[in-house]
Image 1 (cartoon, one colour):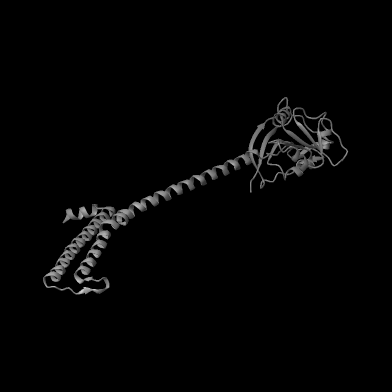
Image 2: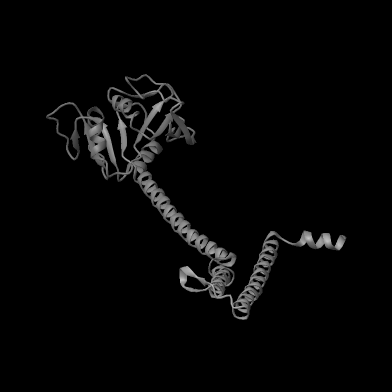
Length: 300
C-alpha cells in the first residue's frame, strides 16, 4: 500500500499523459481487430447464404447480389476504420499534435526573441541618443565673486583683489565663451585672452575690440551654442537675466560685507543646490577669507 502510494506520487503529469495515451491506442486497436473479425465473419456468412441457399436477390441500386453489396459495405467501413486508427492517428494523432505544438511554440519563441532583440536595440539606441543629447547639452555657467551681502563692485570696479580667485576664474573660463555686459567689458583693460569674448549691449552701433557684440543675452547664448560650457561673467543685470538660463553657478563667496552699487542676485535654495565648496582663510596674499562654491540647478 505504502509502496504503491509512493509510486503514484512519483509519477509526474507528463508520465500520466503518456500512460493514458497508450491505453487509448490499445483500446482503438482492440476495437479495430474486433471490427475486422466481425466484418470477415459477416462477409463469409453472407457468401455462404448466397451460394449455399441460392439467395440470388439483386441489390437493385448497383445491380449486384445483396451479399456482394453487403460485403463491399463492410469492407468500406473496415477501410475507414483502418485509416482512422493507423493512418489518420499517425498523421494527426496525439503525437502529431504534440509535435505541431512544439513546432509552433518554437516558432513563436523565435519571433518573440526577435521582437525582444529589436525592442532592446531600439531602447539602447534611444538611451544612447538621450545620453548624447545630455552630454552635448550646454552647461551654461554663471561665474562671479560676491560678498556676504552679495556686493559685486562699485563704480564699475572690483572691491577686492584675491589672486587665487583670479586664477580660479582663469582656469575655469579658459578656452570658452565669456558672455558679459558692456560695462563689465569696459571695466577690463582689454578682451580676455584665450577666450571668445561676447559683449551684450543695447547700443546698436557699439563696437568692441577683439570681441563680438550682440544685443541680448539670448543672442549671446545662441552665438556660443557650439561651446559645451559658456560662462556668464557679469555684470549685475546680466546675472539677473542669466538665472533663467544657467545650469550652474561658480561663486566665490567673500566672507565680509562691502559697500557697493552692483550686486549679485539672491540664490534661491529651492532652485539651486550647493554641490561643492572649498574654503580659504585670509593670509598675506588674501586680505579676506573666501570660499569657492558650486551650485547646480535642481531639475524639476
